[in-house]
Length: 255
Image (cartoon, rainbow, N blue to C red; front, side):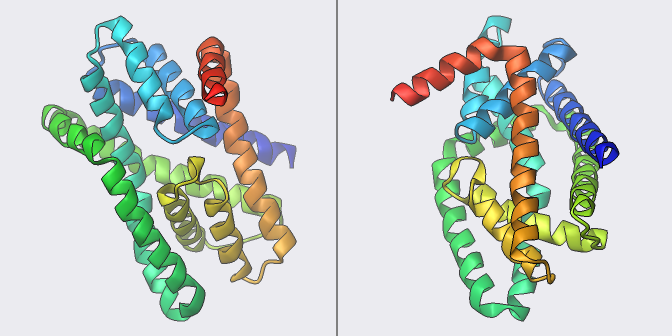
């Protein structure tokens, strides 16, 4: 088990480095690579601890010290987010629709909820998406490099979940793991809760139970997944930007 835990954190650390490299390229190498790693870690920690997007907003203002216009850094984050989540959302809708045929009662309700949440999310992030599309024209030369890296990240996360499941004695084919995670991620990402808290876990538990797992095992996997990803980003974020995160959290809870 300790070996699996180390391997899990190694996979997630590689995932962080790949995300940092993608963001660094989207900034056209306008900052040092290590600074891009720092920005991604702090933004990820704030997104996990607060609201999705709060880290991007805070780090965009921070990048002003490097003479980056806020509009440019926000657009880079928008492109980064768009490419990072697109494979999961597309797959989540596809596999969710496919699964709802076999389990219509509950999954039809879930997919309907996801559709409503998607409309809400798109409206809420309309300006964010506009920035992304305008910046996309200036970043086309980076796209051929970014797409393979995004796909590598998808593969890494599927392997991460495979090891996580095996830690609880659950052995599923990789394609089944991908389907489960894609649907759970989609529900969580489009939910109004911070970082999909509760929505992703609930979907994950339901989908695992459909594979004949007990409620106890399913809950354990979902909670462990949330703890691992949150703790990892919190450690990385606080080690690289403790003061900024503390001030943001203080302001958040004051309001």
